[in-house]
Length: 458
Ligand code: PXG
Image (cartoon, rainbow, N blue to C red; front, side, top):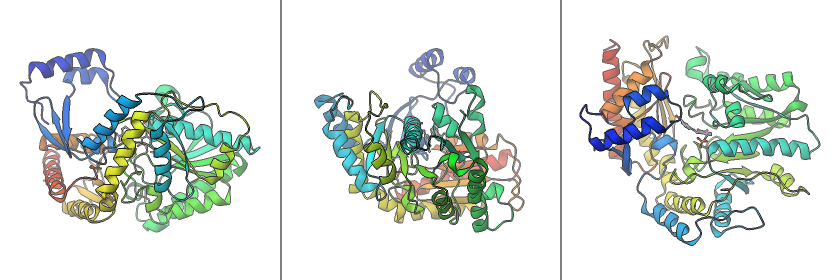
């Protein structure tokens, strides 16, 4: 979506309003205001359109969320119907609504066995903050008030609210707000390509998992409440765990009676080829958070799912639970989630991500391994990562700005790809077709060619 030097007056006006009054997430405000934000006006299927009429294929499904693709009338109609019938009512004072009741039951059929009780919020961050409070409350109810420290991982992304940002392990997320809060600690993550050196992948997975055991022993198991992790780390670099990693993590959590919370905000709703990443990696969590793909981003909605251990304790507490949002179980968001799940089921999008379409995507991704500046490709379902390197053998990198350079070439080539350091990432809508996958990877190759040329590597 190259911004032509001559942009329309309407675009200019939107950019001016935006620059003067809108603070963007994760942006350098003054630099963005000077450049002018790109104005996205509409979207259809896997394509985005800007206010200047340029079209791009959205290789990131928005922010890893538009699983059914853009422009689904079923979701719009379900939302409109709920807006007319019950635009709002809360679920605080002994009331509920049909949409949240139906969604809760539906979710219980999709989540791993036993995760049958759901609390609703509006974002992944709120779900994770809520989960932290539930974990603390659980141990208080169990008469173990010292069991409070939560262990998560370096480069984890669990959101931006105070507890969610404390759980997150991306270094830049902490100093501006004096985080992490006390009681949150971070351990190594299973990023074999960057950290594994010459080690065997399986051995590396075990070694990194055992960092959890070491930390539990260091802190004392009586002080550790939970381990909190994504099945596949998304925003932290698309880190796909070695096969040995999750079984060992689960063994350690069981051994030391540490709860396992799985953040399914990206992996949920088909992204890894099954309904949840926990299915793909055979994880049996005590609790789970989900958001993004639950409504395909058409409405803000998130949830925490509780398994029997936490669920029974919290459910049977003889006091009021002091937590909940004005919009918990919002009827419009829940109606859209139900329609979204119906589309995922009807169009067999999860089966396709775990079957023919996912396999085709992975095959096209792997074909980039022959590119001069690609050191590794890896993926699962409809997630894919490409490592840009100067030297394939030594894994030596170009400078830090390389990912950004490549991302700019993607934009010029007409695709949205995410740059995480020097790792390029794809997470397209699950509705993507084979010809669209071909287009995505042809344009990705073009962007890598242009990047290689700029770096003097071609
Ligand atoms: N958990 C995970 C695993 C996430 O990826 C959150 C929680 C927080 O969700 P909310 O709805 O509060 O944003 C996320 C969000 C990126 C990017 O650039 C990723 C996210 C959000 C914004 C940008 O990759 N993930």
